[in-house]
Length: 426
Image (cartoon, rainbow, N blue to C red; front, side, top):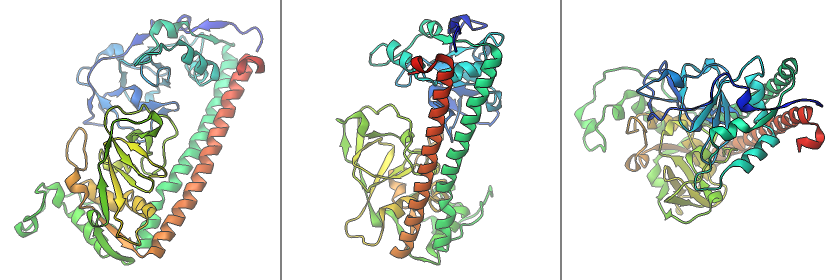
């Protein structure tokens, strides 16, 4: 568009942009607790799916977010990343590694500014302005100086509507992709002829002392009827030849490396919950020790195992020490790595792990407990049926994700071209 004025962000706000709270994050105890928005809670498209919010002890009103506030990440590998707050998230404050901009709606729409931060021009500016140091950062004054082409409000509204339609289409396709993979659980249970018990929420139950004798654990959760009923269901699954302790069929590798390239490293954030797919967004590489893994090893998250972050390694690499690295024993035949990963990601395992975790703030599955996970092992033909179905679902899911990514990139390009013209949009 010709004749559009360039306006610095600092001239479009109703109050001085603000740095966030420095309070220490603590676990949420109640769904109505104040949420503490940190840069780890959002990615380039909003709140991370399955995100677990934290809260704080001391809530200061000056850090409360209003509908339409835009947060700019100011530090770290994701400096420049943006998030627009919506009140349907619930009452929230924001953390110190973010800078809040509250825009004057008589001058600009917050959504328009947010979508403009998805353009290649903004990305190029972020790259150029970051100070190359151990911890890249962009300060408030620098963000305030960033200029945005500002068309009239009616034009902004139309451009925002177009971007929201594109984002909604992208969201639907990504949900379809995730549903394809998470839906494998029902297929797996059916092929195993296995029916898990209904949740048992009893607060009190009795156990014979002989049942507890010799056990590694004596905690009440470990002996919940729900967990014991799940074990019996696995042991009697109609189409499983046998049930085996994980330790009996697999080794647990803890070979450590301290020297590795960033692109080799896989952290917990690098694996999608429930689906076993690698995350598309880059994550900050780990520092210090990492576990070495090989192709066809199965990585199984120690931290919050109910999130089902399980990946069958498609290549060699190193990973966070918050993974268990599991390798099928050499003398075990007829157990496929892809089947092992699928069953470890299933409700068959969740029924066990949710009663085996230790720790309140960061619940984990301990090394001495993961070995006791019971897995059903059908004959190789049924395993291959499950693996083949997984492969088909994965191919369809990847196609949907590629379509979603292509549509979103095209929408962003149209947005930028409409504002700047084809000669400047690149």
